[in-house]
Length: 289
Image (cartoon, rainbow, N blue to C red; front, side, top):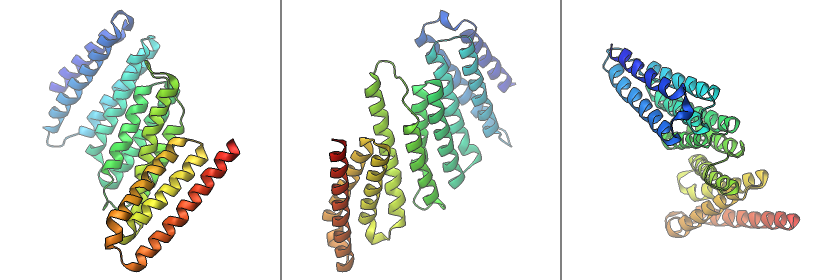
């Protein structure tokens, strides 16, 4: 009975918004949509969790499908684009909230990664900057949930690196109130940072405990390669930031703690990689000039 009442409540408010979506101001429509979703999701999840055999995943999946249907109806009704984008973003958020009810550990991180990747790529087709931002946020959640001891962590981190790059390469989406180049620059920077953090964690997990700094240097080298491959300077800037952190760790931590042989190896490899990066960067810059 409680779920039936909540479903009726949700349906009535949705119909009120979608029958004539242009009669309400955009801000009011967005506020009603968000409140409607919050009420249904929070109260419904509480009611479902009280059952002996809770079907929380199924409930949240139904809520996500309902909001996906709301996005389709709003588009058919030629509602303001912001309302359609809000329904799509809430669909992705609800799917992300549903994942912990069904999956855990490796499967949970993988599910979040796929959800964020699909949301980020789908945003290009529907020109939804909010959906794209939600997709990147879900990828960051997956990165944070990928603990050091998680089995299969290396595969998950590799997948996150690829996901961040694919979402960033998926194309630009217009953001109201911001010039197109500025919006694109901000988004690229956020994705480059995510890819850099994932790559640092991936390479660092492969290195022995005493050679973590060397792993950071390798990660910076790989980021430089990604930046040159896709011709995007934000990846190269992220690589420079990782390289600066590696140098700081080398001077402040590793010099005192490493054995002499590892210390010498780290300095030699670091110097070689710095020379390679400097040479490659200079050659490519001269070629473009």
